[in-house]
Image (cartoon, rainbow, N blue to C red; front, top):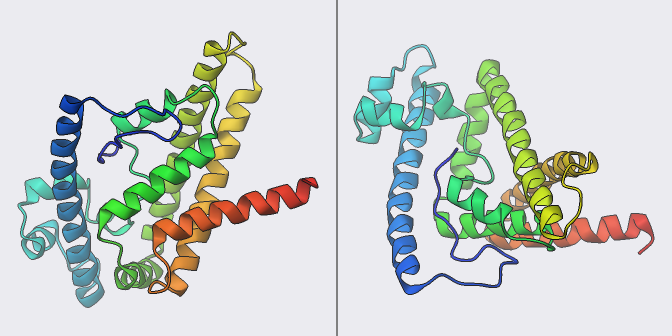
Length: 237
């Protein structure tokens, strides 16, 4: 799983942490922010070097030196220089975040909660950078194999989200005394994964058009509201 800072309260739980848990979460958050900063510095170094010199001419040692880390640290974050070019996913779903999300019911809206997690992580990241995004796009455009790697990664992540949503729906069913083996639950999980990634992409594109006018967290919430409006309109609500 990916590493990220755990949220204090998963949307829908209605309960906050104890004082000891809050201190642990704060410490975890600091460590994870440092890890995010290191992860980003590696990506920036890789993109800039490869944009200037070409994929075949740049080594992991070159990237590590530019990022100010050791090659060992590089490989703690990425398995290859190609992997460092593909960009991060809309949610870094750590074990802690996944566990809280899956145990947030019964009730609630899994898609709503995923959007809230995305928005919270985007707000706490502090590294959202349209210029970096444009640099990544130009590099990926030059190397189709990197684009293919990114698409494979996104498909795998979609399945990861679908599985997490399915586990939550099954847990909800058990808490309600219902059948947790209902075949519709995995289908709903898969659909939620597809919709979540589509919503994230739409919000990202809209934000990139006017990054100074709206924050990405606000745009994610806005896109969710628009999705609800579209679905409600289509269903006649």
